[in-house]
Image 1 (cartoon, one colour):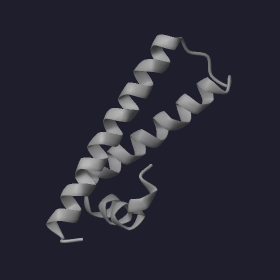
Image 2 (image 1 turned 30 degrees about the vertical axis):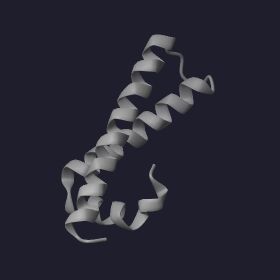
Image 3 (image 1 turned 90 degrees about the vertical axis):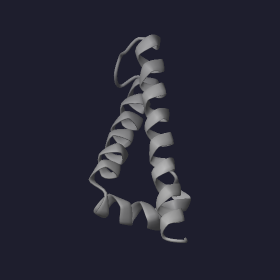
Image 4 (image 1 turned 60 degrees about the horizontal axis):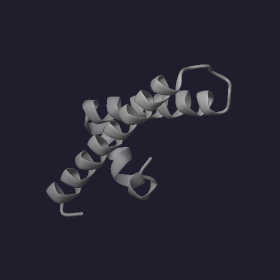
Length: 75
């Protein structure tokens, strides 16, 4: 997720517990979605869509946190 911001993400995961939680949850959802799409986990299309929406929401929140951090630290 957001690989172009690796350095900022590394700092935020250490300094910001909420960001770390968002990042971890996003990765968990990413794995669950991949498992469902590849047939390792069976869930309905509606459940899959809900997971994708939640994952996107977390990504948007993480991105907003990254942008705010970069602005605050003049990066």
